[in-house]
Figure 1 (cartoon, one colour):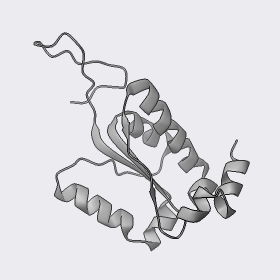
Figure 2 (spheres, rainbow, N blue to C red):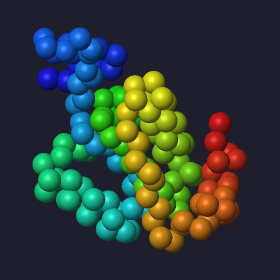
Figure 3 (cartoon, one colour):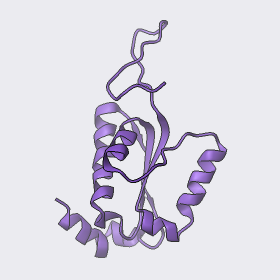
Figure 4 (cartoon, one colour):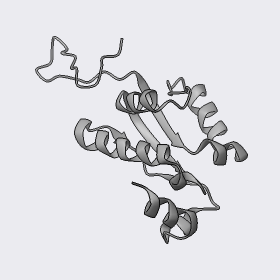
Length: 134
């Protein structure tokens, strides 16, 4: 059973606490962009095939933030409109906070091929999305 963030589980033979996670993997992605691509479908299928428990649910902000906190590993899939979504940017910030505070693993981001150069150069939608983010 998973514990809320901050709760620690003490193994009897260990002197240091270990965190318990509800999910093995959290994927942060812009749904409309990645539906057009099959990348996230393949990613979820591959993780399922390996028996890795991945967070999947509705896009309700409080649920997403809790899922990020209770996931062992996260990965961000950058796409054309990722930075135009306040929710995606909030997920990105939450991922980085959890990496610092909870020592969670955040994998190197995956850039859908059509956006990698624009993102690296902070051009187009990426520049606008970051500039307009609160």
